[in-house]
Image 1 (cartoon, rainbow, N blue to C red):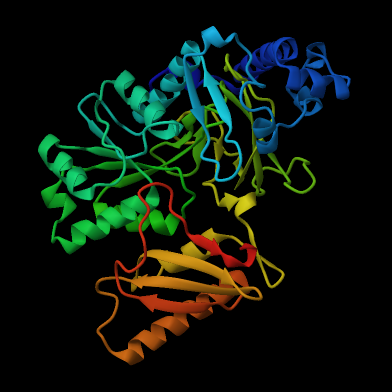
Image 2 (image 1 turned 90 degrees about the horizontal axis):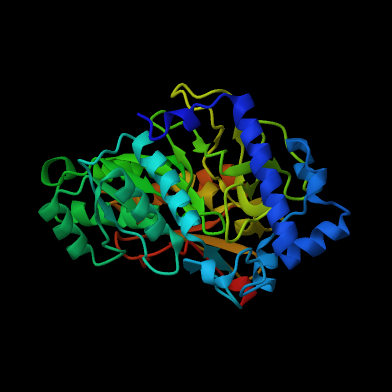
Length: 430
């Protein structure tokens, strides 16, 4: 199914022409209205007239997290303030956040992209969406909410947490789709198991849109098994539109980036040079259809790779692999680069392991991992626990080249976040 068959299946040559037209408009807009970009373009001796092909994108400056913070609150605004319909901010943990502005046209365009995503996964007006993301300054809940309403779904703006209420709403109103973080989805699956509830019998859930945190294919399988749903990977970031930047289709092999709205690049995060198709690198996005706050070559810090092959679903917008982590999340342990998702991949692939874990870095580069056991993870014999602990240590050493300490803890022993999960505690920096 298609929301907009014409644009979703546009021939690549026609899509490239549309991208170039919109890139030229965007470059002209920021050159005329945004002092930050005026300075950046002048330093490179570049004007909008230099953008004659998509290859000329490389003439334009990168934009970083630091640039957005340095220009807080309104330094990147490209419209008069009276034309701003909504403000969102990033969830920064230190200093000033990033201010992100949307015009009415921007909000409608964002909802259109989410509508494409819903229809692409088979959602219809017969579905009931329970939105379990945080409402407020975070873009995730609201943007997806309005896209769902465009398609005609009934939306329950439940927000995160309060699991008893979540369960009541699902049962009372026949929720068929949830929008949720992977960590909370795993926690909710645990809750159902402890209460003896079987989703296929006691609930009407059939799909889950999962995002806001990087997660592994192994975690997807755990969510699917625990909730009895079809899990779709949802990618977005507040600096673009929030959710709906890229989404899986029914093939579940990579996420289609809506290229009529975003020009994508994959670069080496160290050299800033482009990498070959299929090679991992940092995702860089340029907005092509933003009015209030267009961004040129925004460095997301998210690590992915481009899938060059056409998708069997018929959509011509290219796909990226699931996000494998953030360049900012990389841990250096005893001189070795370790991504938290490497650890998650190992843990979620072991049936006796539960759905929660915590990585702690301490002392002189010591890494320890607390791992919750599954409810049926062991039979109470100490020997079996020791064997499981050794198995986890060896698999983690093989995956990361670092031998961690592993502590097995009872189910439910580790704290659960109702928002984005905190998986790493780095005491070396305290």
